[in-house]
Amino acid sequence: MHISDVTSAGDPTRTLALLWREPSTAARRGPQRGLNLDAVIEAATAVTDTEGLTGLTMRRVAQELRVSPMTLYTYVPGKAELLDVMLDAAYGRMSRTDTTGQPWRVRLTAVAEENRTLFTTHPWTATVSTLRPPLGPGAIAKYEHELTALDGLGLDDVEMDDCLTLLLSFVQANARVAADARATAQLTTMTDEQWWAAAGPLLARVLDPAAYPLATRVGSAAGTAHGSAHDPAHAYEFGLHRLLDGLATLIERATPAASGGS
Amino acid sequence: MHISDVTSAGDPTRTLALLWREPSTAARRGPQRGLNLDAVIEAATAVTDTEGLTGLTMRRVAQELRVSPMTLYTYVPGKAELLDVMLDAAYGRMSRTDTTGQPWRVRLTAVAEENRTLFTTHPWTATVSTLRPPLGPGAIAKYEHELTALDGLGLDDVEMDDCLTLLLSFVQANARVAADARATAQLTTMTDEQWWAAAGPLLARVLDPAAYPLATRVGSAAGTAHGSAHDPAHAYEFGLHRLLDGLATLIERATPAASGGS
DNA sequence: GCTATACATTGTACATCGTACAGCGTACGG
DNA sequence: CCGTACGCTGTACGATGTACAATGTATAGC
Image (cartoon, rainbow over all chains, first blue to last red; front, side):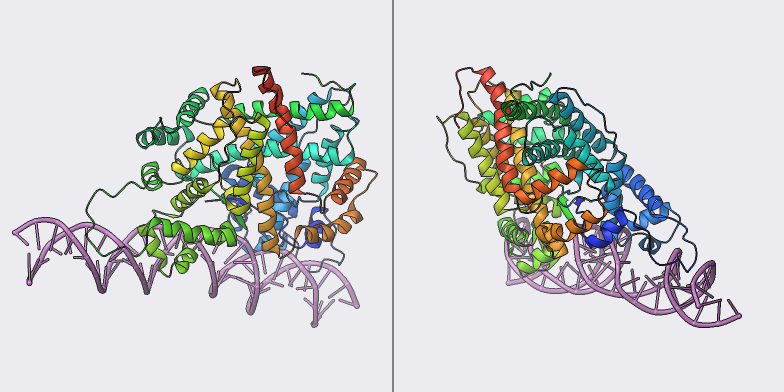
């Protein structure tokens, strides 16, 4: 039922120490640790990749590591912080294409594509809120990299952040739909196509086409065009083009010389 | 912890009958019903408006109606279907401004604004997945109304749906941030400003500005420009303008005559 | 009017979650 | 060599959605 979780729900000090792997100050006294933070992150990520955010439970991760559930709390203060470090680690592992010298459209498309790949390989990353991002090395490196794609276009600092936020928000929104589709399909054991195939005829019985002419016409046109009333891949292509067109009027006003390719 | 839920997780037949208020075929035999579906919807909506989606529990709604939790199952097959009818009811109550004759930019801005108002008055509507929308009278009326804003612009049916989807997806993504902010603030008893105020200095200690020049410069510029690293209202204005600019190149190619206002 | 039946309502119960807490055993600092 | 800090674990609690059986009520058919 539940799909999305919050990050950074814990104490910022503790979380930041975790993210930046601050070494423990005091000398270790007790027994050897059987695991380490990265092992926990890896196991948790593996579980969540295959079973979704609903599958991410402390018990499940512990089982994966052949350890009692409570043991995880030795390495992580709680589930929220675990999600934080998982996210930062995923950011850190993203591929970062060097597109210096290329037209800005190519550079922004690459940024979008890199995030799209992240959301594809780790669908759960699309559904967590990044309002309070994990301020770890991964997230910072990602931010730095993505800003370079917007550097030298005549935008001021705030505009650069605005453009990046808009672009990433679009890619994430698009990926959420795909993630939702997967989660819902798993939850209801019914794919989207099956659901629309079941709901469509039923709807036709109660729906008066004369009362809602546009809805019925456009709805069925869109439904038949892509498979089943919504095609994330098509929406991505369409949306990205519109969005870049929209950024173009801003960017080319700032630097009339810079004409983006494609 | 959990913010987002899925709609339409139940049997489409049962859900559609509920949405369209199909009268029960058989004659009523047992005791009088003490409530009705709309009362349940109203109570559930009131609870969720004030306490968020996490506050929406069957027990809580039942308590509001001074009834045992299991009683709700007389009026609704389950929580998923309850969310469906709640959403459709909220759609049905949305105000629909008549903007016929106005320039397309004005019309689309009105559509965006109406949805923004929905997400403001009922924040939870922004966080539920509408991949499988509640196909009730409210949702259909909303779809019909919003499509009229895109009618007569020379777009084909699929393009109309594409444009609307993109626009609504943007408004929803923006509203999700605001909803997340509220939920996180409630969960951690710490506002966004407080969180950034706590995390910022900590981050400055571990972050090397030389290694991440753009991130530190742009990050702090954006942070000081709006209150705290992200301002949903600003992002909305900025994004909507870019998005309409992007749609302009599509629309004005379709109908060179149609020049949008603003 | 009487009874059988359909239905509204409810208390109890179960599986699942995160995690607080106390106990147990280990290995290092003095 | 011993006290103590720390890793690890079993048990337990409150919260969730909802299945199930029991209880009571109002109507249909006679």
